[in-house]
Length: 106
Length: 187
Image 1 (cartoon, one colour):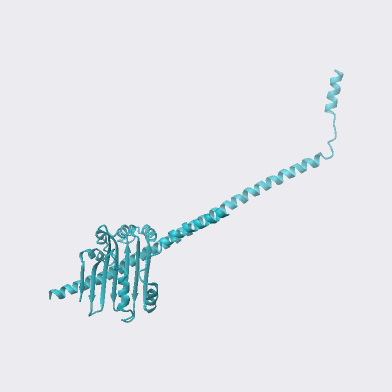
Image 2: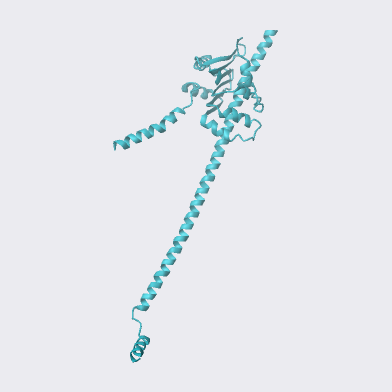
């Protein structure tokens, strides 16, 4: 019984904390905080980069689409211009042929 | 190292060959083209290859009346090349120049359909068709008026019945009449 009591007393006896414990705990806490801040910063940076990338990509796609629309419209107009010119030339030919046929008949 | 050079050369060739193949056919000699453009008061040049025509066809979505018909016509074509020169006064080009342009198309593959000469008004019109196995694979129009010179080259399969449907473009159905007017007339 004495033995057990002695062990118990020894275990429950108040012992002063090691001198560096507080410093180590504080240092660890600081490290954890700094790590958490760093991770949060990294997350925000990633989000910002993704947003910038998405905006740039979206802008580029929109610009490309507009350019293609403009080019397509220009080409479309060119096709119609070419066909109008062709038509004009052939109309002239038709008129000449009609006039000549009329002259022949007369 | 040699392999890399060979790969580079082959790569460059692979890129250059299609680019060369897409070179538009010359409607008229470059020197003459420059001279005519310099003399003309108004020049219209249209050079549309197969890929450009295909791209343009995508934008024919029914905004204009003839969009659908033109899209159908244009999709199968290999190219449309047009030069129109308008002059302030007559005699800005010679008949020798016109003959030179026309002669370039006087080959076995081009069949003259209409050859119109009006000495009074000095107007000439030539229409030639490129026929392959009985099908129209091209059309060349050369129209010379005192103050206007028009050269049109359309390459690829042309269906005349489709052309007749194009009513909106100032009555483009004239194109459809070409087949019916196969004659040579000099007055």
